[in-house]
Length: 304
Image (tube, rainbow, N blue to C red; front, side, top):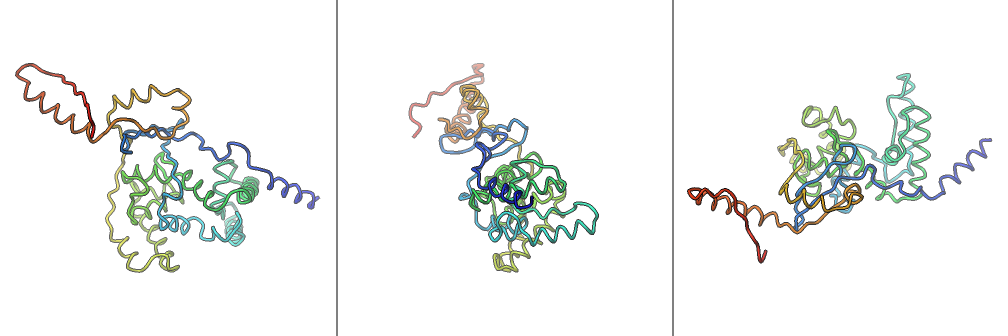
């Protein structure tokens, strides 16, 4: 019976992944950009979260190292399941008399994100089998990209780029080392390590991760000291909404299925030029106020 079960599992793992399994679900919001690539607005996903997919190649290697240090130190050395971590978690759970530590690898976490399962022994077994199947069909970079874009960072933010924009008002690629490392600890406990509400706890966890990176030689002592000394400009950065009338018109022109699918939409608007024109029009209307002028329009013949 055991032999048959093992054979069935091996055959199941070798089967191709189901079609659409890796698609973003729910679809990410729609990112609207001006002609230079600047953000005009990002809509929310159908579930109310804000998410945006970013390729792993766009992320700083030091940032990735920070995530691995806090979530799965042996990520590149296991095949989906870290037996050493699993044994350690099992001993912890036995002492506690309940499941308090899952020993989940990043691959196992991705498996739960793609195929939600109960947080019990049956759910853990399902997580393990799906992790083995993912490792059979995806390389480590693809798995890590899935995790970084699906992890929850609190306050309705899903994925690292959405978190970077919410907490620091900038894209993931524009973060300083101090900012990136601060965000890296949030997925472990999104409520407890919410930097807007529990900054001290978040920084203690961040400094602990820093110590691990220094011990491994990934970060020098001087670099760690610089990161600790760097001030953080944390604040809620809710949705940007530049040129709202233009953006609303642009979105209305899209077919419903395109709006629902999310993604990026490049527009013809030059936001920098738009702001210059708005300022000049405002000044001109003010100068002509004695003529009871209240509105004005501009036609641009050449944007260069």
